[in-house]
Structure formats: structure tokens, C-alpha cells
Length: 255
Image 1 (cartoon, rainbow, N blue to C red):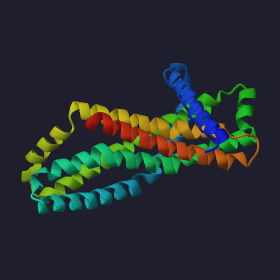
Image 2: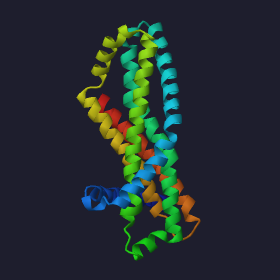
Image 3: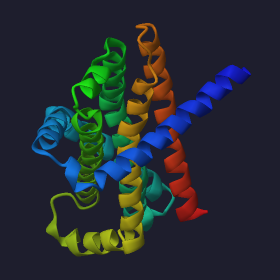
């Protein structure tokens, strides 16, 4: 990597960190929660969650069933069937599904956010807003961050719920007699510490999915050729950030 490319890479991260701090301050200010912001956030939630709710739920259920069946059969083959349920619940709900959900929202919404903001930058729409006295933070940025964060959280909850349902039926079928053992195992996995860990990780995923693409879009200039470069750079940083959050989460919990 050339020195110029390295400096551009670090400037991109610095810009994203600075924007995250500004958005955090704005998010804690009640003055920003106007009817216009709520309407924009609701519209973003509709596109991010409701339009993909059914296919995402079916996909997460299918993925969970396949992984659970493979894990249970392998565990039983090695004489470790007693640990199979706890293993699949831990791996799926605490590690794999939250990361996959964040990647899904990043692919669907993160790239769209970066493209929209970059095109606003190229067309001068953001400058026109500022000239008219309209705060882009309230009208464009903060609603997208709120919608993306809520989207990651909601879809993570849905995918984890589907994984728990699939795990029960894979282990016990239609019999109700395994419910007591199943709930005991779930309680063993979802301790207060683990719930706090997954909540913090999910929030960080949601913030990253929106803040990094917005920062990337703002790095575009009035030249149309700068838009795809900004979007591509933002998506690379976003995937790197999601991976880093997951690695740090694993290190804190298991190392």
C-alpha cells in the first residue's frame, strides 16, 4: 500500500469515528427527535425490516436447521450427544446468527445508504439543505442510523428465535417432554453476562452498518466518479469493522 493510500485509509476511519461521536451526541439530544425524523426513520425501517422479514426468516430457519442437524449428528457420532444442544445454541444464537444478520443488513442497507449519501454529495443536495436551514443530521443521517440499529437488533432476535425453535424440534421432535430439559439448557446458555455481551455486540453491529456507509458517502466530491470509489471504500471498511467487532467479542468471552 502506498503512503497516499494508507493516509486515505486512516482518514476514512477517522472520519467515521468523528461522525459516530457527532451522531451519538445527536442521538442523546431530545431536540433531534422531531416528527420529521420519526417519519423518516419509520420509512427506513419499512425498507430495511418489513420488506425482507419473510425471506430472511425463512433463510435463517433453513440455515439453522442444516447447522443443527449436522452438529447433532456429529456430536452423537463422537459420543458427545449430551453436549450437542448447548453447543448449537451457543454457536448459533451467540455468535453466528448475529454476525450473519449484520452482514445481511450491511449488504442490503449499508451499500444503499452509502450510495444515497454519495449521490446527495455529488448533486449538491446536502449543501442545498444546509443553505435552506435544514439540518442533514436530523433529516438524513440520524434516521438511517436509528433504523439500521433497530433493524439489526430485530432481525437478530427473529433469527435467534427461529434457531431455538429449530433446535428443539431437531432434538425432541413433536414431543413436549423435552421442554423442561430444553429450557434448562437455554437458561444455562443465556446468562446475564451472555445476554449483555450479545446486546452490546448487536448495538455495535447496528451502529457500524449505518455510520461507516454514511461517512463513506460524505467522502465523495462533486465529481460523479468519486461516488463508486467512496461506496466501495466504505463497504470494505464496514466488513472489516464487523469482523473486528466479532473477533474482539470472541476474545473477551473465550480467551
